[in-house]
Every structure is written in C-alpha cells, then in structure tokens.
Image (cartoon, rainbow, N blue to C red; front, side):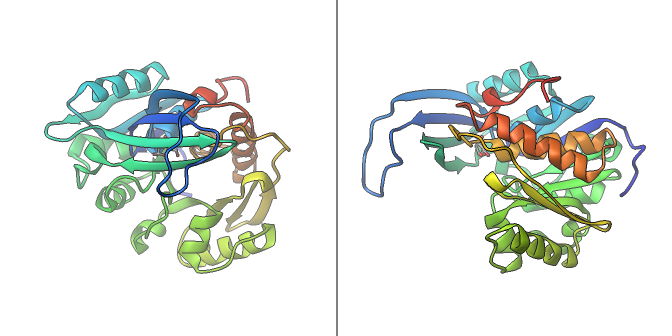
Length: 300
Ligand code: RIB
C-alpha cells in the first residue's frame, strides 16, 4: 500500500454527481409499456456523490471533485452534498452543460437506472489545484461515470491509496488498474472484466484472483445477499451479509464503496473495512431511498 501517512483519515472522491429523479412503481415497465408511479422524489445522487456521502459516515474529512451545470440543478446538488458533510469547494459549475441526471425506477427491491451524463462528461483531466488535493489525500476514490481520461489522470496523481469502483461496467486502462488498491466490482462487472462466470463465493474468489493477476493490487467483489469477497497480497477472504428484506437497493453499492474507502483511510485492514461496508450496505437496502437510507455517523 502506498503512503499510509498521506493525509490520514482524508478521502477525496473524484466522480459523478446527478439529480436523481426517482419513481416508485408496482413493477418495472416492459419495453413499450407505460406504468403509473405510486410515489416520486428528487434527490442528490450519482455514484461519486453517493460514495462521498457514505465516506463521511466513517472518515475524518471528505472532499468531492466533480462538475455540475451552471444551473439550478447545480445549486441544488452543491447544497445537498455540502449539507451531508462533504467539502464541495472543488465542485466546479461549467457553462453550456446541464447537470447530470439519473432516471430511476424502483419496484419491489429492484431498480433500473438511466444516466444522462451532462456536465459529468465536460472535462478531460484534473486542473493543478485538483491534482494537488488528490496528491495529498490518504484515499482517492473514482468510478466510471466520468471520462476515462479523468480517471487515468486521477490515478496518476494519487500518492496515497487509489480505490476504483469499476461501475458502470467498462474498460479500465492497464496503468490505472495497476494502481487500484482495491478495484471494487459487483458480480456482473467482475464477469465482464475477467470473462469468467461468477455465480457463488468460490467462483467470485477465483475471478477476483484473476483480476488481481491482471495487475490490480487488490480486488473486492460485492455479491449482494452473499456479502463480499476480497483478494489481497495476504490472501483472500469472504465477509457474509446478514439476512435482510430488500426494499430498495439503489445506491447500496456506493455506500459499500464509501464506507470501505473511509475505513481504509483511517488505517483499518481490508477484512475489517469489507465487513463494515457489508454491514452498512445491509442496513441501507432495508429502507427506501439512496443517501436518505444510509446509516449516520456512529451508527455502524
Ligand atoms: O448507484 C446509484 C447511482 O447511479 C444513482 O444515484 C444514479 O445517479 C446513478 O449514478
């Protein structure tokens, strides 16, 4: 692991931020079908923003670097992220682009999400002050809803620990993969990155081992109701999840990533960080909402 003393306890998330337009429905519509929502809400979302809010539950200090539109949605997102305890001084409003948006339907524990990237796609690298902030953090977190050039630039400027949530599924450059400690994937992303079938704990551990052999320093794979597995240079392990009734799993993966990153930033070993992340995600899937369903500081 690189630079453990680097800004101990601080997490910097470089990532996406969206206005989530959520509709609760009795069942997810089929292609060509129209259904009526039973409830609706608008909230701060985006994998990066959710992960920053989640990191605040356990980390000492969390900053977010990203892009919104110079519009009312941008103001809404800035205020919302700040109100959840995240430093938004490096959230930049860009002219000529709308803030990112996600259209989410939730039914009986399942969801579908369509993301309109907007301002999240309107940059291609970090500026000098952003690069310096990344370089000073204990842990830096990225996902794949921002341009790959920004992800690669962030990985290259990281002096502490680089954590990549390879979601939504997509290619990861070889230099960036070599800096991941860990790369965090769900079972679908793990299957896509390795070409291996993932169906249970043993096959997930085998595929995670293969992904580590591709160059990642460590790998964590989330397995829904089966918890998560991890592979490091010290070996591998499995953290089971408690049995819970799933009401809404939207953003549970982001909560997992944020808590894991926060725990690593405060010096916890991988097995403890993964166990805490599994526990946090299990709490959030039992309630409706994304960041609204996250546990609060001290609750874990
Ligand atoms: O992971 C959930 C998130 O995915 C939502 O908040 C939505 O904005 C999309 O980015």
